[in-house]
Amino acid sequence: MAMKTTFLVQTFSLQRKRLKPDRPETATTEWGALKKAEAMAGRLPGTAALRIVADDETGELESATILGQFGEVPDDFAESLEAA
Image (cartoon, rainbow, N blue to C red):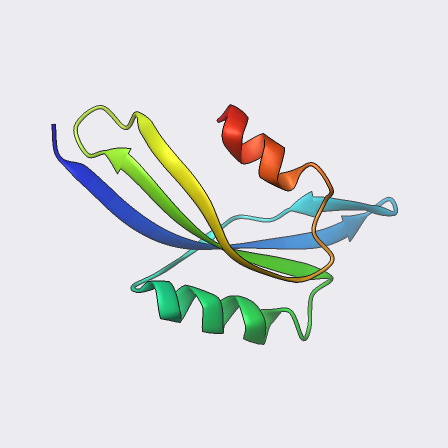
C-alpha cells in the first residue's frame, strides 16, 4: 500500500447565484497550490488549495486537508471533503 500526496486547486464559479465547484487543477507542491489558488481568486469568486493523500493502488482516500481558502467558498466545502 503506497500512499500518494496530490496538491489541488479547487475553483468555484457562480451559477444561479450559488457557488459551484469547477474542475480541480493540480499543482506540484503545497506552496504552488497555495500561490495558484491565491492568484486565481483575483478573477473567480473563490478558490481553495488542497492536499489529498490516497492509496496509489486502490485510490482509497486517506485524508483531504484544506491548505488555504481565498474569496468565497461554499459553507459546506470542508464537510464535503470529510464525507468523500
